[in-house]
Image (cartoon, rainbow, N blue to C red):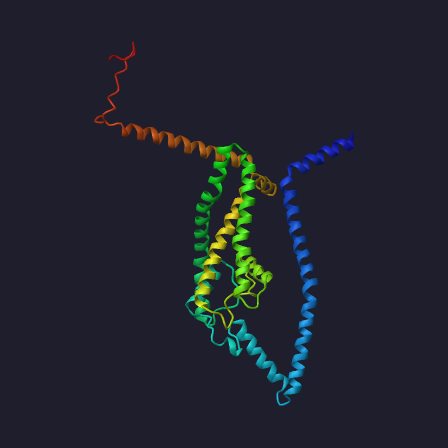
Amino acid sequence: MLQSLAGSSCGRLVERHRSAWCFGLLVLGYLLYLVFGAVVFSSVELPYEDLLRQELRKLKRRFLEQHECLSEAQLERFLGRVLEASNYGVSALGNASGSWNWDFTSALFFASTVLSTTGYGHTVPLSDGGKAFCIIYSIIGIPFTLLFLTAVVQRVTIHVTRRPVLYVHLRWGFSKQLVALVHAVLLGVATVSCFFFIPAAVFSVLEDDWNFLESFYFCFISLSTIGLGDYVPGEGYNQKFRELYKLGITCYLLLGLVAMLVVLETFCELHELKKFRKMFYVKKDKDEDQVHIMEHDQLSFSSITDQAAGGKEDQKPDEPFVGPEPPVHADGPPQR
């Protein structure tokens, strides 16, 4: 008896706070996913980092042995300056001296990466004025970019997702949820093909040092706005038509970002995902719902009265199909 009462009370308690329990599990799952990623990255990349450090120590020791007139402190200062310049996008190599980082097309590419929050980090402002302008430019430009992308994605989604799904649903009578799911999968496959596989094949041909995996990696890192900056196209010293190439990459990034957002919006509109997301949201209180209902009723009543008032004002005596209202008598029907 007591066990059944305790079980029912616990069940009611869990059901009452179901959203909080789901949110707690979501937070726990996210933290575990972070730890899982850290463990995998550390176990995979740490041996390669150790090998690279050993190789650099050997090269440095061999260089100092071959150049006895050069001290280790002088070499350290030289390497530090070279690395500092490299962090600003300026290479000390002789074959890279002909490419500039701040011509118009490169600056346009940099502006697109800033506004889209991709931020490769291969080129950064050198001067204090450039850094200050980058802050102001980003404060205004990033919300402007979000507004622009939202408007574009909303219009594209209507023509690419909602109308085709509704047309198939009404034309052949299939379930709307099934049509939306199949359409989302097909749209995702088409987007991955057009903005990942095909560009990756193109980049693997145009970039001398990239294979297909590295090119696909660049496409994913760029269109997901992660922007690690370890692979940036058009930075080779022998790159042909570099300005046109940079302009094409800028257009590709903007179109690809719109396509990715359209796919995400399409999947977010699926009924199954909507139900799944609601598990982690806070439910509205009844008082809040009543306030919304009262506001809705007030708005509806005011709109009806406004329409009625507007209709009376629109009925003018000189219109051909509107005549004066017949008089109404209390003792009988209206006289004609």
